[in-house]
Amino acid sequence: MNLERIPNEEKLSLCRRYYLGGFAFLPFLWLVNVMWFFKEAFLKPAYTEQPQIKSYVKKSGLGLLLWVAVLTTWITIFQHFRAQWGVVGDYLSFTIPLGTA
Image (tube, rainbow, N blue to C red):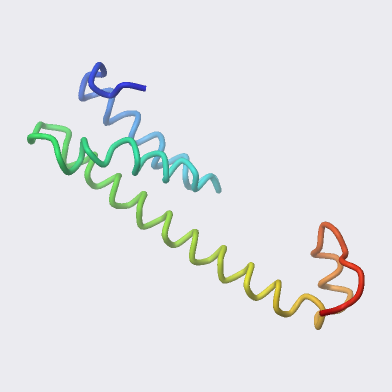
């Protein structure tokens, strides 16, 4: 998508939709929001909608970092303690590995 061809009001609307969509457990939308709108928010000359776009980009980046931190923590804990959790660890596993580490 070429953001150069879209009016500023539509950019703001699209940025807001991606920001709100990230709350539906779709952190990929926050990544897309940051990637697409970073230049619009921080590198382009000032225009009316820019402060709001900048706010959505910052919040999307923060949400993305938080999501990555939580997911990385959960994956690390699960990989480390799954065998010790016994049956609960097996129920949480999609595939049950043979043996223990």
